[in-house]
Length: 461
Image 1 (cartoon, helix red, strand yellow):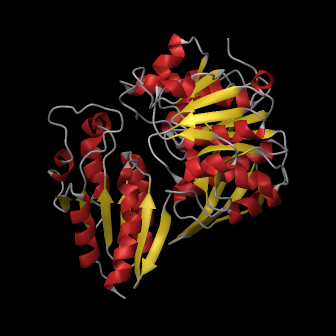
Image 2 (cartoon, rainbow, N blue to C red):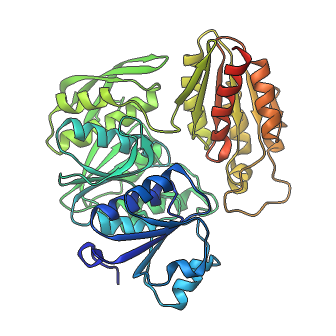
Image 3 (cartoon, helix red, strand yellow):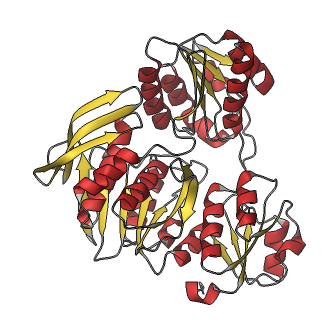
């Protein structure tokens, strides 16, 4: 039986893989409740250091002895059953919780808003938290990325609302049972878990069925997958947003700028103001529309929500400017699905202006590359130059014949350079003023952005 939040206070909860984006946020909130937190990860990091400063005891090896004495263990989908800590916990019959189940416990005493979708959920949940803060609601939040303005991915607020990013990748988001939910879009992804598009649709339908009957679902009518789902939802109120007539919240008069965007917002037939963002792209305007529609339906003032959205400065690894050297701009982005890459490169092309767009892309997972290599090639062709690293395996085993060359073989402007040192040297030495260099992917490609900034600084010093 799943423990209650009250039953965990004063107990020891051990997090396997505590340094991950989702797990670290849960650990931070658990500590704020007076729960004793221990954990393990494979390496030291700034996240681990920060959690230690808050009182967590963390080992940087996975060892069976780490879980002895724990009352509950929490593990992420990245942890396999062969993990020595997971195995030992089972031998000792220590209750275990998935990351999603643990999050559902932590937000069980709050009015929760779960933000789901194939793309945009980290940005949308971050925007939601910042907008509610501007309304003096002081929400709790647990998000899979660091909000730039606060430098944090999790917070225990004093208000009644808890904003949670709802990850669909393993179907575990049905654990949340939120008061309200946002679905930004629905597409086939995580092909290691969802074999077909229908499997993804079924998972989101199951998630929608867990929304409180006195709550509501906010969904994007511009997205075919989300609109198809909404037609099947009868258990709660529906709130729609988008750029088409008939939405509860409509965006029009859209203006897209190199590092910002704006649009007029119309809520149920009445103009309520202008959405002004400091992040680029129409996709981000739609993310903001989801936040505005949800906030208005909760009864918050449009003016305060819009002020919060205007204050939002982005989330780590979401079109994050890492540095500008001699007119060369270096951006890092988490995009790893063809649709995400398409909208990111559209924004990057606008940002580049008269400069070249140079992309260093690292495919994430063999299964995703096998399923979408043609779509990757098509999306990446928007760049002037594309350098593709070898596939970041994550937890997957290799698939015969599946390499990054599947993508480059389809691209006249694609170069396959698997060596990180060779890639950074090449990009640093060939960069020109006005270029935009974009490191792209969900793996360790992000580490290259800082190296490139440093190398450019040396080259032009």
